[in-house]
Length: 370
Image (cartoon, rainbow, N blue to C red; front, side, top):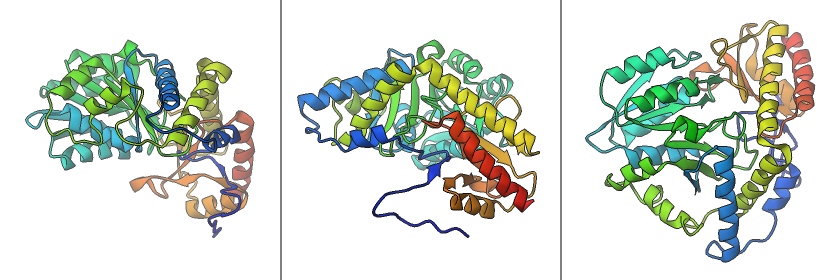
């Protein structure tokens, strides 16, 4: 088996086609290396403002955007602690491992949590949503847009109106799709839309971001025991000064600011979304051409991460190891999908030619293993 070790001198030399963390371009790494002022300085506040205003454009929203020093799981927990009162029931839709995680966060925080799930690989349909919402009154509903474990993209555009019509606040986990797949927060009336930056934003881990509606802030004001580090009200107060309550990873925020400028003003959002769509289509075509099956329900495949069924009965660990030997990393299936599936991440700054080069080598490896 190929054994890759920590490279003290050069850093990782692998070309990452993973669901995150992803490849970080050299121009972003150079931004991270620049000196910074303190987090209470005017230069920092100017940078913070540029980042939050850029996020508003990416999300098509006028809602306030916040920056968290955590992974996306931190914001998932913040949503639970800030928006669900102890005597309320929260509804968690789940189509995979990370939907299950959000439900587990609810349970671990002592909230009355209800999970409505479907078979992994399937989506929450409008019919499933309607039936679940008819069973009880739920003040808050939690759902994934892009489920990283299954490679499924929920039909959020169809589900959001149904959930909002029930009177609930809507929290959407767009961890592995934000900045890769278009989501119009204001049009869909999403109350919290969250992600971490080590996926479609193509930044190193360390930050999570979200938009928060006025209705969500109003609800948080009424919830006791919100905690301190992930308190939305505290974050909002600091955000008004273009700061964070505690010291953030300033270099990462500099990188975020630079990357948002690139996304918005160089590549352009429309072209970025189209590129991710092209990457998804090419991966699905490749899988079909070599007689592999996609794991997701047809028509709901993600354009940022492809989960592929092990329909050829391949030795997936060996396949991943052999590809590592060629300088590329993909990953095994997640959770109970280990060895039953494998995943190819095609998000961030990956170009079509990069994907095609990797898939050509992967095809040769698969042919050897069959």
